[in-house]
Length: 167
Image (cartoon, rainbow, N blue to C red):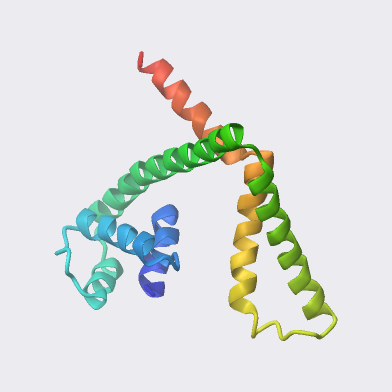
């Protein structure tokens, strides 16, 4: 959608760059809106104006984007940790049967596609979209069942910061 902008932003602010490159339009628009605000652009600025501005950044602009990245990355990580906690709380309340069924369905689909491409029963390019969805879901499923070292690291960092600040 905004590949060129995502690449330019990603060089300075990788988390926001990935958000802009996200295939989910809402996430991409959120990341783009943050960049526009940081650079003082009009919310309705066209893609060409944003790209031109990113190609001619001043040192102050680079610093502003880096600061925005830090703020956005912490908020994003907190939301991710909260989201995973909500999923685990739901599993404690309702049980794991539904989670297990979804997990097995995705795993069967994932390896089914892999085997069908391996044996020449399906064209890898033709099923590319389904493969990417299953590939992304596989990581999420593993994180749900086995936890997230990234989430733990963020949680520990936030806890240390609060302790340091007396909060």
